[in-house]
Image 1: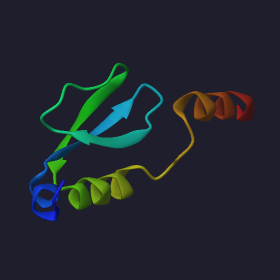
Image 2: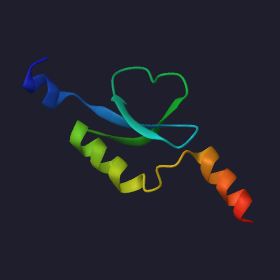
Image 3: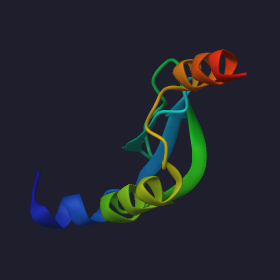
Length: 71
């Protein structure tokens, strides 16, 4: 793929049930278990969005388990 095609490629921010984020091509069906977060843009824009919103990298199940043991 040429650099020009890469710059034109649109991505979307996706997340799974464990609230882990990634990017996926905007023109392709989402893989099983992943949901659109709502943001789309260039690769860099989507990665910046993930950096902004994914502040706790622990999977949701681990966070819930740790909260339950702390209570």
